[in-house]
Image (cartoon, rainbow, N blue to C red; front, side, top):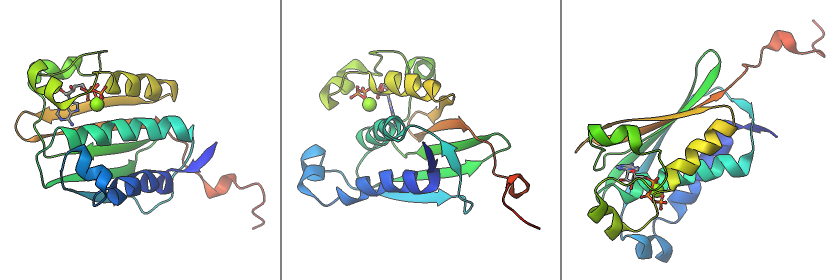
Length: 171
Ligand code: ATP
Ligand code: MG
């Protein structure tokens, strides 16, 4: 369906804000975090499957929280380029060692087996996210520095709405 990506992205992130003080959040990790939003002011309308998009953002947000120490800031951006929209989610967490970066989207791949086992999970979140993003015609990648944090990027195809295209615009 055709959705306002600014609204949808914000709605998904709001759910992470709301659980911050709830019991659910305390059970999860006893972790505090702040979500910062830096969105373009222009509304970006994209053709997208809402459920699948939500699943991807949920996976990346859960990782940003899980692999960050207490009190971190998670910065979520939304921008447009010529033919794409780009979403990014940046954390101040553990980061990913350079040698592991090419593998984190592989099925069952987890950096530092011992640490990851203690945190729970299957190592499927990013593999599934990659499949979903590709099925939406987009790309997903990561930039990271061990000990400093990680930024995950998602680009999706986007045709900017041109007012000249409006059939009903009577000049
Ligand atoms: P699951 O998502 O299935 O519960 P998982 O989180 O271990 O388990 P992925 O989401 O696929 O699996 O992530 C793969 C691995 O990449 C993780 O185990 C972790 O080592 C690393 N990783 C993912 N996101 C981050 C991040 N934001 N910061 C640091 N490391 C990360
Ligand atoms: Mg995960």
